[in-house]
Image (cartoon, rainbow, N blue to C red; front, side, top):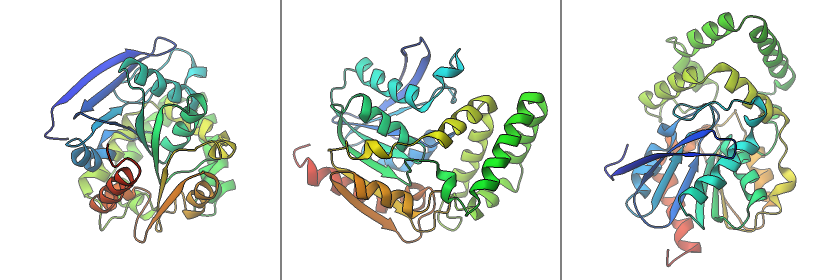
Length: 294
């Protein structure tokens, strides 16, 4: 991912669950939190850029890729992942860090701030939301939620069939153009390989893990936490994002104490992949403006 040397490791969280992480570079830490069922590739451009000036840290969520699935389903939640970040910082002896969250990563960082507001130097929220994102997705909230619960019910009855269907859809030739048409990516800007890696990555995540976290996301409401965020906060939205439309980011900007807003005209739900140079330069300016001495 980056020419800077990579260091890897695991640590045991509050329930003994083993969490995988990667570190590159030296200096002030930047910790990245990706979207639901995503993977490190979503941060490839940011890590390549910032690892030469900062210490960049990536970690896999519970049940994602190299991190274990917790033994208890109750420990598979947004709050549990936020606790993992807090303990990751403790494990690495990090007292302060910049945090960057994309999509599902934003509620996780909100919960982290609620748990330990002393950890953050700043937040960058990219295509984020603080409550049920389906509420604005294509204007089909009721239909999508009904489909989700029907699919979950079917999975409880026959997990083999639903898992096979899940993987066949995500690994089919139509997956990449479908994800783009749905507003997840800007097909003309995002590297095709990045979209393919995402699709394969989602297929690799255990379906029970995905459904459990997705349902937790549907019930999540972190609006009351926003006013508690006193650190500098850069909110980035994509005007072509139909997954988490602009009003989600506007809600964040209207409620945090020190907001800065960047609306990217042709950005999709993955603005950091659509316009990596633009996003990186804006993030770098944000860090330098607020912490000119590093």
